[in-house]
Length: 148
Image 1: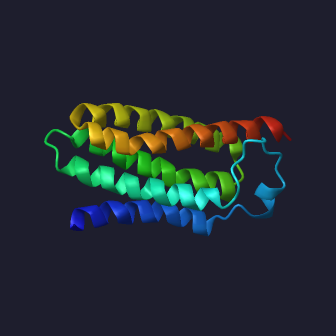
Image 2 (image 1 turned 90 degrees about the vertical axis):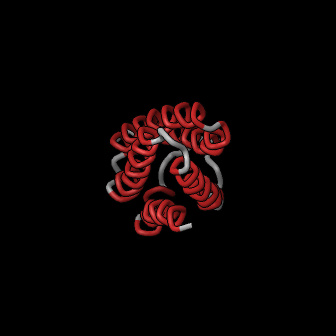
């Protein structure tokens, strides 16, 4: 149980950036695509994803030979934590897009490697990759539609 709590704490640290760097007036003033989820969907989606991420991380600790996947887990949570202050704090949409591309690649590789070790753990990570696709499309559309 302590191991799960450690992963949950790491996810909580990433989630805290959303509290510290709120979208605010800057985000509301951006041109956004029609597929932009409603504002309430973001905290709901991220809460579910962070719980799944903590569960996947915990499950990986129980699997022999999962060290490389756990290293990718650590990398993705660091990148995840970085995106919010870059996008919402610094308003650096291009830099945030680069972070998101690297994050997507890390999560995709992590998912494939996890799936090879344990199918359920790989499936647990799948909603995260799907949500990152939405986030990347949204970030890219904002980048294209808000050139200064």
